[in-house]
Image (cartoon, rainbow, N blue to C red):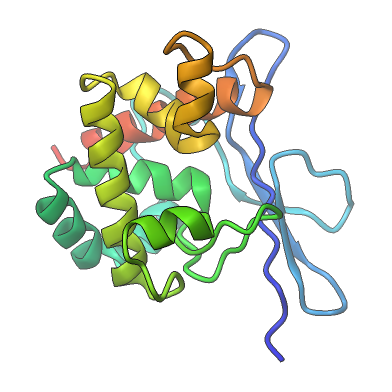
Length: 197
């Protein structure tokens, strides 16, 4: 039996108000991989450090992980007519480019699609990178359309759901995770954009 991969990348704001997206991981004795941005166990090791100096493109390790899926990301982005840098940014924060990632809420794969979202977009194999990316890119396209190309609202809806964004007057919901998630993705987005120049 394959061990369950637990993804707990819950971003939080620092005292200065800037969101951090450091991602730590460790594998326990049962073979379960744990991810967190708050390393509460001495076994955690930093997987992704953020933010780097403003002019620094994504780190070598992150670029290497992204490169594995580069063609599939570009294909999904072209098909959905969204920015490939945006897809890379969402993936960096959602799963750290782990196609087998599973969140405590049951979100799966590179883009951490919840089962209902996967069904909505016809994703039958959420752990297949191509299928997952196709569904996630289509979802982002639809969110951008729904929110008039307001990237912050689209990202908030990707994290917290459209209902939460709409319930809060089409603003970023006041959930700590979502309040940290949006700027974290935007930082990665700018870094991936700079990396393609």
